[in-house]
Length: 408
Picture 1 (tube, rainbow, N blue to C red):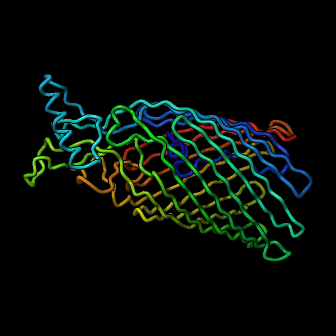
Picture 2 (picture 1 turned 120 degrees about the horizontal axis):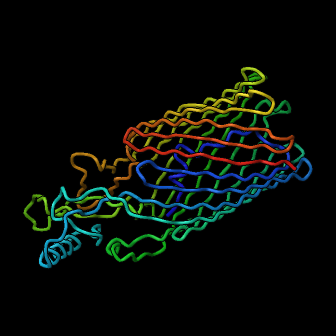
Picture 3 (picture 1 turned 60 degrees about the vertical axis):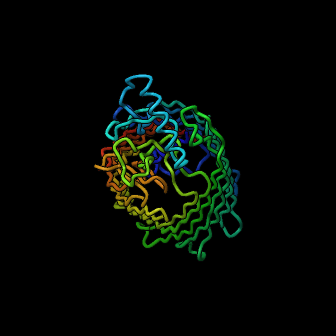
């Protein structure tokens, strides 16, 4: 399964480290854990940057990460009482599948209250690589082009990106950026009526994004960036690992009995249009303290909208030690086809889009982090970060990062 979601809650928190302009090589490891013995992931990244004079810069990155644990999804809990009970369940499930293709063969419970959120084991590994080339012309405009690739057992991604940065005048107090990216992904999804037998087929996912930015220097100690962004996704956007509960009137009496609720697959629109605004400021309080407040707004045509507000600080305690505390507050309005699995009635109609994915629900979240950067020698720097994240719907996670950067 794609691990982009669990590894990018509120955006993966960067390791506290100053911007490097010199040639360098870095290696970092991130360990991610969800509370409640759910997902555990380890991410390893090796990156290299090489400058050729002042006009060309090439960066490359290799990654390996693994994920294991349990993914929560609806499942039946009432045990079978006899062979006749098994046959009756099969009969009712077949009747539901004749009524709608949304019902899956992953189990049926004759009692509405018998369905419970249960952990389902998963284990996967991902290999990734990317390269980026930046060219600076005579006017010092920057032209960047990149490509990336990642591969998992059931997910593949190929992408390309480009960006141009140019200055408003020779004073270079204002600059503009324009960039975009394309992703051509494939996921191996369960077929709806065959989920219990693990029959899968490859489904395509296309993602395109554009952004336009403005960076303005206001004083020698203060500058800010303003970015408008938009995105378009199409293809298979559902999560075939997740399930929902659907009410199917299989006896046609116009009412839904307690034995007329069936497991169905997570179902989302096959397109998604999104956009928003990102504002970030950088203010040097003095030579040792830099404050970096940030605000981000997001909205899409699924009904999701969010606000993120917070910031980080760089505190140079000494010439060789820097601390970087951070805090972010996040609020999200859920998708218009989301239903909380913990609600009094978490069921959906027989047809239509449906998801019980907490990440598409409405919630408020807090993220706390503390980073550190230790300069061991003139060329070697060690980096570390610890972070904790909590949502108002009960979800919690934590992660830490350790790494080193060597200039050469």
